[in-house]
Image (cartoon, rainbow, N blue to C red; front, side):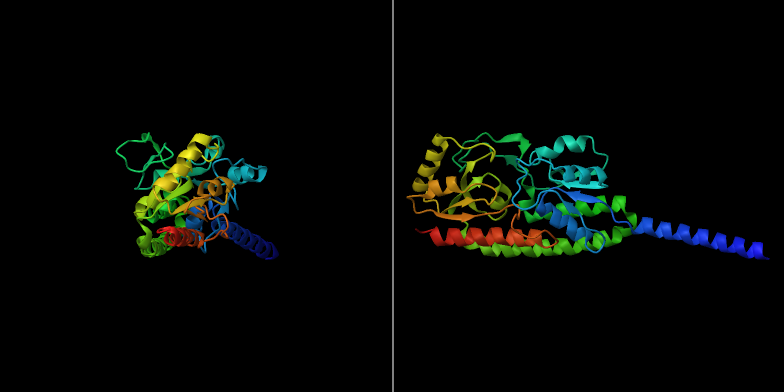
Length: 310
């Protein structure tokens, strides 16, 4: 009888231990890594209440010239899935991801709105092509909320494929995000409608999706590639463009020295302001994309409205 009781106890204990391990295994959230903050916010929104993704680039770090740290490499090595924009933006991830066993989703490949990269520094419509290449896609796709909705769909599908138990929760979060993004799109459209005709120049050519989504009048960039300092000839051409076209505003970015921007607007009627397409000064989290996009709209409107008729 004693043996039977002990055997029953040990069997019951083994069953309980197995059940506990099973529950722990099921409860363990996916290890998710995201490259930049706007995409991280969308992934965090789909995962809200289920898990928390890790963010690689924090603060004022730029994907154009980022170097992976040992902690970044470790996070990538441990990841179940990695969301990034793609090699044209984040070249620093191209080699590490080739040897990484995690599932990878390049978000620029899942969006429906895609534009060729612009290769000229001044691209107003004068009937010339300005070096547009159909084989080179502008990677700044997140700056169109329609693309953000596509990204949310792809994120939910990818997470559900690895975590089927939570698929309904991922889809519910994605649906809520899509509704928020639609409302955000309308809000920014209303914000920018009064300044659609005002010409402006940006620091680097990263705003094509934002400009075309809201019908804005961008006429040039100080540099196409922010890793390369523009020539004196380019800077003089931009100064001339500011004067000749009545440019209302020239926009800097927090990731780069604003000295070039200030030198271009000096002695002209153009205003100066800052646009941040990465949300570098915004706390990461589920609301970061919405805060970033609202700030883009509001900062653009303030500068353009103030200086449009100067």
